[in-house]
Length: 187
Image 1 (cartoon, rainbow, N blue to C red):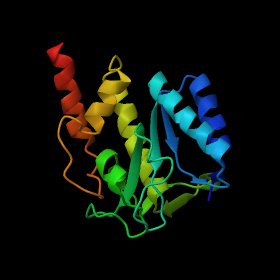
Image 2: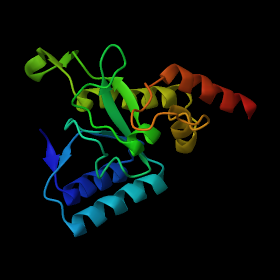
Image 3: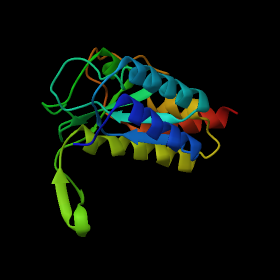
């Protein structure tokens, strides 16, 4: 499993920001936490928010109630893996910040390319996270002049209150596209 210290994560995010990224997909576990590293990580996530760069992060697969240090940040969009019936997989972490700002996305029996081009079938929040990232990328490809705030508000359904306490809603890219097209048509 990929892991990074909070300081390494902060450096990697800054490198992405400096390279001009508009969206960053995080699928990792944090190791060796320190006060300095955590402050650096939080400062970098705040910097990403000010720069209008969206952060999408895998919530984790520890079957716990509570979000990670990354997904507690208000700018981060947390992703929980779900099965084909739209139920969170048993290993997925759940929590109130996840229910308010996160999404369920397909995360079981997902086949992609593995090493040397051979198919690989996996399941986890790390497998689910690219679905949310790609939905955002597709929204920006359809609405290239949309601001980061407009995209984030439409993808996270901030126009409607969320009812779930700890389980986020299923990603609905079609609804986000319709909402963004409505916002753009009003202008």
